[in-house]
Image (cartoon, rainbow, N blue to C red; front, side):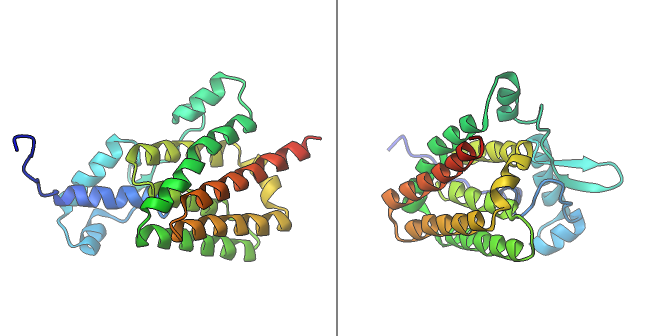
Length: 235
């Protein structure tokens, strides 16, 4: 059994790093949010300040967070023009929202199917919380687009594929910052909002029921709905 390797215990700083990264990927820590101080974070997580410092250092190196002199550490705000590979591709070519939706179709339908196979209770809870937040935002007269993003990231996270998660994170950073104004037309119609909530609920139900085909089709119908909306708007 020469191929077997000893199991290495994960360092505490790695666990802290993964926990903070997950909060960012799931949208619980949003771009521009200020992190707790090292001391407060160490107290909350019951680890040393050195451990926190090491974990945050990795996040800074990877571009997830940034230090601001005299102000603290903040979740990085991507530059729509230069800070994102999707942004660079969009700016370098004559790319439309339909191109973006085609990419979403390819990425997210497969993600939904994988989520139906692999999602755990934590993933389901994240989806449920995102939908609850969307409803709360809508009742308050806001658009709920951040909660919508969190839902789609929860689906991505449920794939358990780290590369897919990173691709989706980059994609949504651009989508919800670069074309937010376009999306407002979709979300400001109360009928559309209710339909979108139903579509998200159908996707989540298929994931809960371990129905990959149902999750795939649910996501496809959702993205088709968005695509049709913009097509009709341009007529």
